[in-house]
Image 1: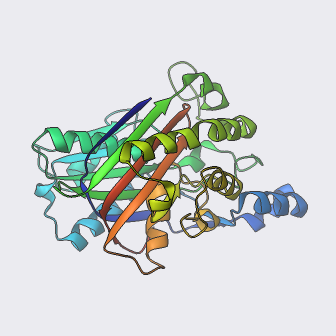
Image 2: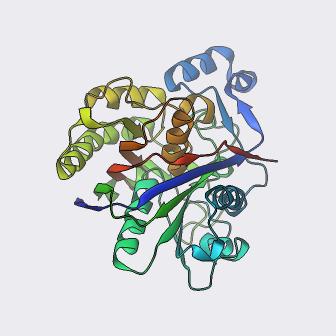
Image 3: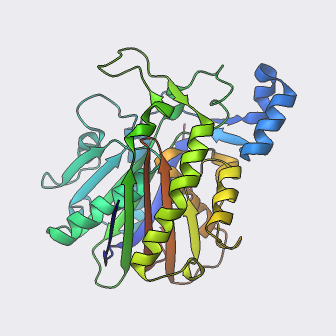
Length: 334
């Protein structure tokens, strides 16, 4: 495990883009049976999910980034770093970050690259952006996170089709002398067989198809998430009671409630957004945070606990003292 604390970049804003089309889980009763779907919806808390047709990560990322830059009044050439965290890039190569650098009109001096991570990817992306901003001559950064997971799931897959939503979030960061952030990062590759898309790479060419062993995912999460949160809180010199909001990866309602109880978070601290969006992988944390902040009165300064976990196995926690971000309405892309 890696844990560290440092001055934090300012969280300036977040915009999420997703497909206009929405799949209602209740409609899947025609394929899987009404009783089965009622049980799945009760257990997962997921009622509907945005589902892509021909959308790509770069298309959704561009739509969100254009709005975010406009709302913040940031010139494209003021961005020094662009990180894209995705498992479903537009192409095997070039990286999706290169496509976005060009489409957004960012300077050619911009450092732009992809990171292949799933549900832990948002906090991992923050840690990389933070490190580069602290050590380099980078004042502003964009972190793009998300996947088009539905393209890896057959509509006949009863275990997975009702769970995943497609979305991409863009987070704007700016160098600051004030906030503080503590990270805890870890991985365990022995869990790779339990959440995997075996086909689609060089080892097994073919159409990507997602496989998930839900029992193993739950066992991993219960084993690793709480200790990671404890380490990050210790690194930050904070307790769970000091957090304004606890934003966990939005896997499903049962996991959120179970983990919330395990870390002794208050109900008013826990953020839920899984009902209307499903599991949106590395987008789930920024999406849930902004969805919640748009509905409540918020103090100008926030102390946030963010925790992602999943494919790899991989986990990541951040305890972040920052200003409340600008949160724009979700962009729906036809």
